[in-house]
Image 1 (cartoon, rainbow, N blue to C red):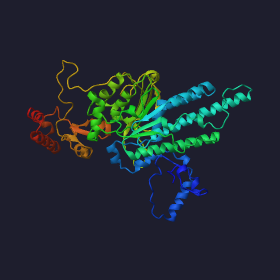
Image 2 (image 1 turned 120 degrees about the vertical axis):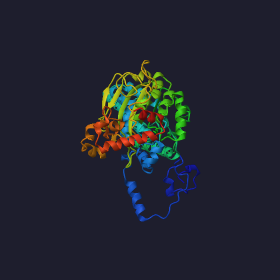
Image 3 (image 1 turned 90 degrees about the vertical axis):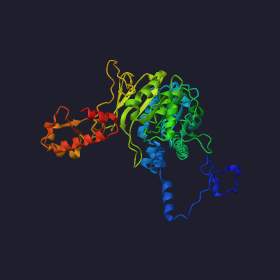
Image 4 (image 1 turned 180 degrees about the vertical axis):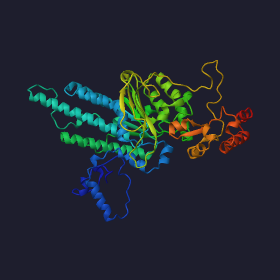
Length: 512
């Protein structure tokens, strides 16, 4: 009945069902078959009806969806749902701070308030990996709040002018300002690969619109009537790396792109994801690049107008090591600049079982949007509130330094040096390495203890796991005579080098 237009219903006049509005959009199209329900269900339903749902953000849908998938399943899909705090870390420096600041500066100038309002009406937003729509929901809510402040301030200025005896043209005296709402759902677009979260995103946007309208009603006494639904966000289901984004939302300087695309390293990617990444990056494809790199490249090529901007949450690996040159140099050379960034911090999500990952947030712009650059620093452990610093430049390593990227090379940069075949490789098959569990035995050995040295490696530096090594480089066999521990370790080294199929291992051993 709810899915049937009122002029096509067969309900008699006076029937209580006539009070129910026509609700389109597909929510009530399919029949709902319920089993016999206990009294407890009725009590829970009544309690839910009496609850003030306006205090609950529709963004919670993302975390609800996350709870039904295991951490392993989310990692496989590269899915990391986003808290409001981290969404705001992205959208505030990208655009929200700018419009809030302009609202503050224009608070006593009706002309500037009107200009700002008209500019908000021109904005369009795209999240090309929108999931359950958390980014779109929070962005819409915050912009509707800015718009409401504009309407309130314009009304107050008109009232002040009239009270002072001034003539006011086109004064905003009517309480019904619903026709003045210019930030609307159809300005928000998303792409999502799975149907279920795409539908959740559409529903969440309708809910946040309802909450924004309620806030307007509290201030002006009237709110827009959204039923039947004629204005809604546009969520396209499909693979964002295979879809032309211009077919979803034509690019312009009024389009702002943001989101939290999926992450997947070389070992976690599916064959389809690797093919998508290769297609997006073309000749710049590098197997070390994370899957999220494809979204940065595609956004940089999608937004072609001078004053464009976009920002994504991403795994911190894209700003480290061999990933930097193939990803960032082509983007920066095409006219983009990193205008804000959050250095690596510990990710969190609104879930009891969040997928652990360290991330960065990188915002890029071109043209007039590149006037300021802000770098957000975190404590050494990546936790806590960041410190914002205004800097001269942000390079791809997220440092206040020139845009230099170190490329991997298999040849010496100074031509006169011989080739380097290996780095600091022990060729001991870990038999000379002392792990924490074995350290006591070696330290109590009067001979072996003389040859213990700290071993620094990525395991130590990145994971905080200390290791030690038997350093026998300048020693003679007589120097370690009597140490059963050293003799046994050397026997294992000899055995594994001799049996190794690697000619270099054999050669090193046979050569001494």
